[in-house]
Length: 195
Image: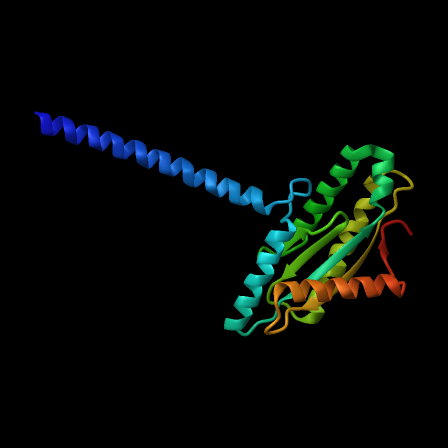
């Protein structure tokens, strides 16, 4: 009788431990998502974006494919904040995040990497594909302008770099940043919603 009681008690303890382990695993998964997500836009944050570039670099080292990284810098967010406050700016950032997420393929990843900077990893894409996709994202962001306050015109600039063999994530991001800054310095044309 005692053995049976002991076995039942142990079975109950094992079941309780399994439930606790399950709950812990769900909590860990939720924390991993929170750690990777930028809360306002709902996109990946810079750290998760860097990890995605590292994944693309490792993948390219094993398989014959090319991946690109695009940066999109948005001007005009200060006017939205001035007209609608921080809540209005947060709504605009969420709309931009939703637009970027809707404008990429399921294999691609997009992130908010700075106050007014967004980025995308474009998997298995040629340089021309990357350029077209990023321009499409810019046009989609520009189309959002109709819902923003009058006088709060937004415009975007972008850069695209291909992930080269042997490059590090930091080198890829630095190259894209450099191209973006060079475009700003030389007056690169911007894509705007209101013409």
